[in-house]
Structures are given as C-alpha cells and as structure tokens.
Image (cartoon, rainbow, N blue to C red; front, side, top):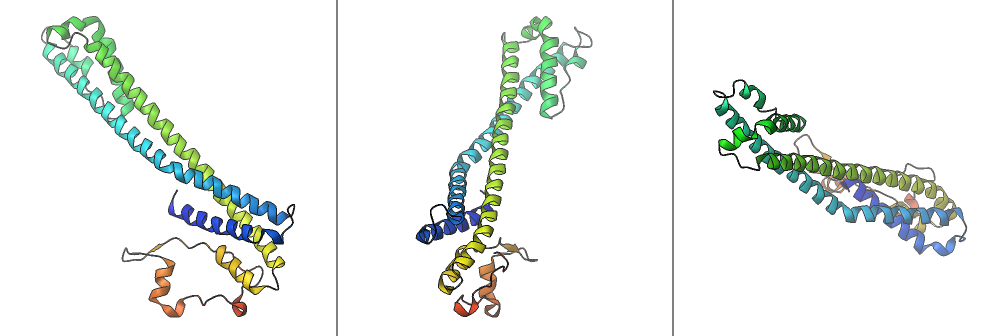
Length: 249
C-alpha cells in the first residue's frame, strides 16, 4: 500500500477505535453504529491487502526476473542457429536470410523463434551435421514455451496488482465518505461536550503527504511546523473547537 493509503488506514483505525470507545452512546441499530461498522470493515480490508502486498511485490519481481531469464535463453539459442545458418550459406544458398535475428521486443523474439522452428524442422540434419545438439529443435520448442509461460505469469501478477490497487482505492474512498458522514453525527451528538469533540477532531485528521521542496528535500507537515513554530496549529481545547461543517482533514 502506498504512503497515502497507509496514512488513511491509520486514520480509519483511530476512527474505528473512537467508535468502539463511545459505542454505548449510540443505539445498536443507529446510523452511527452502522457507519462505525463500515469503518471497521474498511480497516479489515485495507489491513488484509497491506499484509499481502509484500507477497505480491515479490511475485512481481520474480515474474520480471523469470521473463528476462527466459528471454536471454531464447535469444542465445536463436543466435546459435543464426550463426550456424550463416555457415550453411555456401551449401544451402539463401538460408542465411531465413535465420536473421529478430528485433529485441518479446513479441518479435517469439515470432522469430517460431519462424526459425518452422524453417529448421525439414533441414534439421544440416544443423546437426554442424554439431548442433541432436535435440536442438526440442530445446527451441521448450524455450519458446518457457518464454510464453513467463509472459503469461508476469501479466497475471500485474493484473492481480491492478485489481488490488482498485480495491484499495475504492476502500479508501468508502472510508473517507463514511468519516465525512460520521463527522456531522458526532458533532451533533457531542455538541455540548467539547472534550469529546476535540478527541474526534484529532482522530479523524489524516497527516498530509510529504512535500518536496525546490531543493529536492522532502518535508512532512510536522517538520514544517517545527521549523516555523509560529505557523504550528495551536493545541485543540474547548475554546478552539472547530465549528460544525468545518473542512475535513
């Protein structure tokens, strides 16, 4: 989960805990109770995806490495066939043109490999006579299949990451909407209890993403406040409680 999502998760956890702490103040069937339950579900979803992210990232790295390895192995085999075909040119005129190395793109490499296989099959003895392994065509077929499998595996892993990212974004959006709805309820419920309202303002606040200065140094809002004490937000108290309808953090 990216840093913004992690900060949102921290906020949703605090809101969930606030709801549990004050659960007795709301009827079990009230809208507030339903919304706090929604927040709990959002937290469960985000935590589950956060715990599996390391596995997804590892699979993605492995898929990328596996594809690169399969690509290099296939290219080496085609290069050996290309070299051998050029050596056959005096006795098999025109053969060199049929075994030109394909471009480096994976689709071109696979198409070229299939073409090599088709052309080489009826004249396999010519390659074997020049000390290519007797099973070189089987090896080529295996390398083609390995490359196809590596591409398919990587695309599947990337698809899983996209699906997970979509679900995470949807959960964050749902959590934000729920907190906004709860804000009105909590302010109405505790209108005459500034201490609880101050607690609510604290728990629903999400720290902003770090900002990168023109010098390239990344700073967080807390660091900026420390550097300029006069700009720091004063402590929340009864006299500084935010008014209902104020901007959400």
